Amino acid sequence: MSRLRRFIDEAWSELKKVSWPTREQVRNLTVLVFVVSFVVGLYITVLDFGFAALVARLVGG
Image 1 (tube, rainbow, N blue to C red):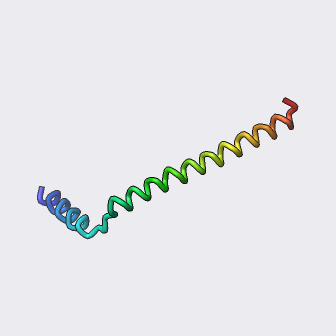
Image 2 (image 1 turned 90 degrees about the vertical axis):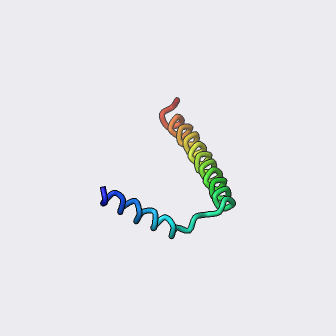
Image 3 (image 1 turned 135 degrees about the vertical axis):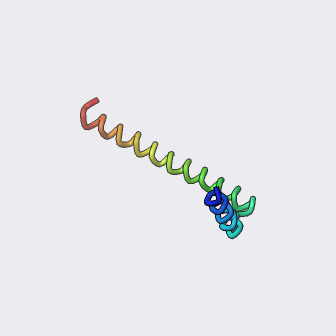
């Protein structure tokens, strides 16, 4: 049991040293993730439709 308590104490001590982001930073980075995900998804969708049309022409469909 003392090993568990020591682990928790050391983990808590390390968490106190962490530089946590501000709410504004979290919000900005969250928006950035959504925007980048949307753009990448759109890019993949356009490529998929393009390649599907190309394959359809090649196989005569």
